[in-house]
Structures are given as C-alpha cells and as structure tokens.
Length: 353
Ligand SMILES: Nc1nc2c(ncn2[C@@H]2O[C@H](COP(=O)(O)OP(=O)(O)O)[C@@H](O)[C@H]2O)c(=O)[nH]1
Ligand SMILES: [Mg+2]
Image 1 (cartoon, rainbow, N blue to C red):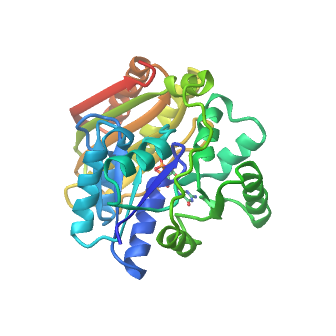
Image 2 (cartoon, rainbow, N blue to C red; image 1 turned 45 degrees about the vertical axis):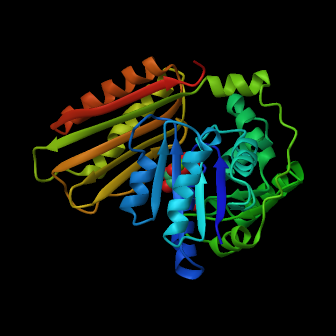
C-alpha cells in the first residue's frame, strides 16, 4: 500500500504533534509510517522537521515551496519512503495553505496518475479556534480557518485533553452541522486518545477528490493570507556557566517576544523555538497567540553547554518590524543568560508581497 495523507489546518492546531504521534502509533501497530514537514523558508532547517528527528520519527522536510506546487519533489520524497517499506506517509502544508485539496490531491493525481492511494483529505483544528469561529470571534484569520475546514473530508478536533465531555460534544456537533461533507473525529495528539480511530480512518478511508465551492481569490481570504509574515532564524548559543537552564531561556525568550507583539498590537498565530545540545537533549517552546501563555512543549532534561537554536514563526506583522522585535529579544535575553550568539541563517518575507 502506498497511502498518502495531507494534514491541513491552522497554525498551531497540532499538525506536527499529531503527525509525530500517529507515525509512531501506526508503525507500532499497522506497518511503517513516515512524515513530511513542509514550509516556505528557502533552504532552512525547519523546527518541525528537526523536532521530529530529535523525537525519533521517520521524517523528511520539503522547504522553499508549498507541496501544492512541486508535485515532482513531493513524489520523489514519497517514493523514497515507500522504497524503504513505508505504507503510510503524512505531510502537512504551510499553515495558511488553503487550496491544498485542489493543488496537492488533484494536482498529484493529474501529474502522477495511479501512483499513490490518497487518504481522506484531513484538516486539524483545536477547541480554542472552533469556539472563536462558532462565536464569530475569530477575526481576520477566521476566513482562513473556515476555508480550510470547507476543504476537509475528515475534520480532526485535536487537543480534546483541554476540554470536558460537554465541550467536546458542543464543538464537534457544531463542526458536523457547519461542515456536513466531512466526518468529524476528536483526538488528543498529546495523550494519544483516539489515535487508533484516526489511524483506521486513514488506513481504510479513501479520498473522494471532491471539488468544494471555495473562492480562493476572494478578497477576505487573500487579505487574511497577505497579512502574514514568515520568519526563520538559526543560531548557535555558547553557554558560559554550568547551571544554565535551557528550558527557562526558551520560555523567557518566547515570553519577551509575545509581550513585544502584544504591546504593539500585532498577533502571533504560531511561534516555535527549538533548541538542542550536541548530546541530543532538546527543548521546545511555542506561542499560539499573544493572548495565550507560552507553552513549554518539551523541556530539556539536563543543563547544557552549547545549543543550536531554530526559531520559526508566522506573525500578523510586517516582516521587517517582526525581525526588529525578535532580534531585540534574542539579544537582550541571551545577554541576560550570558550566551554568546552566532547567527547562521535568517530568512523572512511577507506573504502579501
Ligand atoms: N494540550 C495539547 N496540546 C497540543 C496537542 N497537540 C499539539 N499541542 C500543542 O500545540 C502547539 C502547536 O502544536 P504543533 O504540532 O506545532 O502545531 P502545528 O503548527 O499545527 O504543526 C504545541 O505547543 C503543541 O505542544 C494536544 O493534543 N493537546
Ligand atoms: Mg507544524
């Protein structure tokens, strides 16, 4: 079986966490599975891909372009996995990648007919965003959230560990009513709840290759997508003292950036800060909105001396302004911890340009 699934969904909905959990779960019970992280930065190391590697997942990355528009590169990466015995490969798309059903599923089928079996087109979402959408409080980003969900054949409400049974019922019923073409599943990528059901839905289900009625050129959708900037920074931090706590450093830095964005009235849908030591110990901090606390998604286990750091972000802010805010925070927080910083790579661009 050469099964391929796309996981679409908004920034921070848990695509990477779910792909990591699923590929492990699937590999243990059904057969080999693997994942692809896809993002726009040219030639950068993606935090998501590095995180997957550090967590022991079978992972590759495709950078510089959305898989919507590079079917040959996608097919090469898929075939490399199938050649090594994988049965299921899951790829995400950049977080604002509305149109992936048309561009990836239909496009891949036209360019490489009969080569891959497509699983139901899957869109991940989370309670916070569903609640905002339901109440009409999702703001400009609501257009992206809604368009993504309208493409879904399978909607996966993730992070159900954060809500009780009544809320699970309320949000999933609303999703079923609002998006009647899609099947709705609830999971927690973090605790593993219902991963078995999702595995079976991907293993046994087939994409219908329907063509939902979405106006991809609509002004509201284009404006929402055009207001986002992408940012990639890679640096090395040399630590001077023995009691350096990498987790505190990451949390402090993320918090400083979140505060800077909030006080200047900008939104930060997803900010990822990943750092690792030569020994393979690693830590990760996330921000998914300046109105939410910094989340230490993975703590360091030991004090470390020499760190590689990757910062990937999507911000509703001009990329030059965001760059200045990030750089000021990296400089001041690193000085506080007496770190010596060497920048390797930086890439930033606005999606509206
Ligand atoms: N509580 C909870 N947090 C989750 C779950 N899945 C992901 N997260 C957290 O949500 C944040 C964004 O996850 P990520 O997988 O990077 O989202 P992506 O942008 O869609 O790939 C991270 O801080 C994760 O630790 C979940 O099932 N439960
Ligand atoms: Mg991700």
